[in-house]
Image 1 (cartoon, chains in turn red, purple):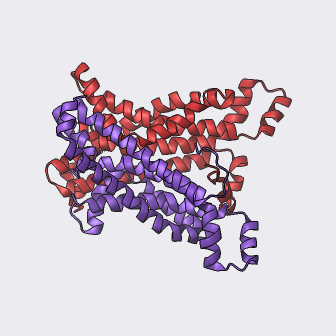
Image 2 (image 1 turned 60 degrees about the vertical axis):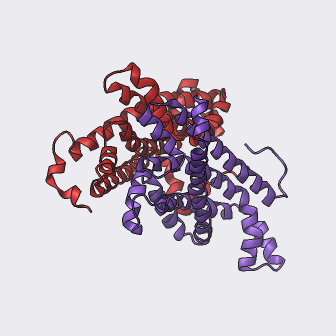
Image 3 (image 1 turned 135 degrees about the vertical axis):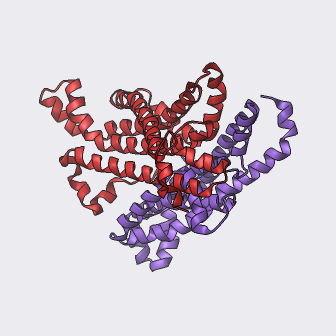
Length: 239
Length: 216
């Protein structure tokens, strides 16, 4: 079944595996970048000012119920007639990917800013920090672990959904799954599935590693002990 | 929206809806049944907790379409077998709920456990009659997330040709026809909301002692 992966013919050319991985990566990273540019500032704004909190709860719940396949196909039918080129398929896919990635980053950035110890903010104020400096030097570094965990779930969601977007003729690793299905070639599908799974696992672990490296040691000290970490991740019992 | 088409397709849509419910709800129940003992185990042992929760996290990382394709290799099923979908979503549900169950049991106040012990409840009795019921709100919060995401994930299986509401999306794409797509999206969202509401009701029924506040 795994023969497909080890056939050198599948490793070159426009439909070769490296090229598909590259495409998958490019779409994913562009979508993640757009989502971050939208969600992080908005999350900071809502977290600091407390305005628009209703947006957070509503968005997170509503979008989870929306089936991404249906949304993707709906947008293709709406948008592709206006763009005769390949853009007619790339654009709807990017919109769906961004739409799915915004809520986790937004809610986590908001929650991160809200969770910053009020005493730390007061201390910074007492030391004469201005609002902007409190944000960049205290609130943002303190909320970084939550922001990054939001980015992590967003990237997973994007990589997963970019696979589905191959159905509406987008490139990327999903091609192996969709084309394999069309050609009744199960080994090609398995190769695609393995590569997509590995890609998701790799980027998940990469972001976990980056999180460990760039989060201030002062914040992670208690997370080193797993027993203590358990206490910090509870879901509030009042939901 | 082409209502005439919807009328003609009514029987077919009900059939697809039935399969969708079956494919989304079965894994939810199976997943909960598997996650309860695993979560209890993680709650009891501080060494097992990171292992179980970590493995669950890794499983949750695998994209759904990839999992649907890989499971026939493991289970020996055909690619079009709905069993693959049930197995994949059960894995996701377990992955989500193991941590939730462990945290739910952790959230039971130590005083409550002590009081149960003092009243003569031991081991399993204390777990079944005191700790689990007190942890129900946390578990049902996790169950709501699993239920809603299951409904959405089932529709992905349409890309492999397994009939459920997602089939309306692929059909609409092939025909360049909006009606089935919009009908499919609405039915998916409504189904997710109904399941969500049922879990909220179940939670209230199981925890009559909690103050009647409107759940968010």
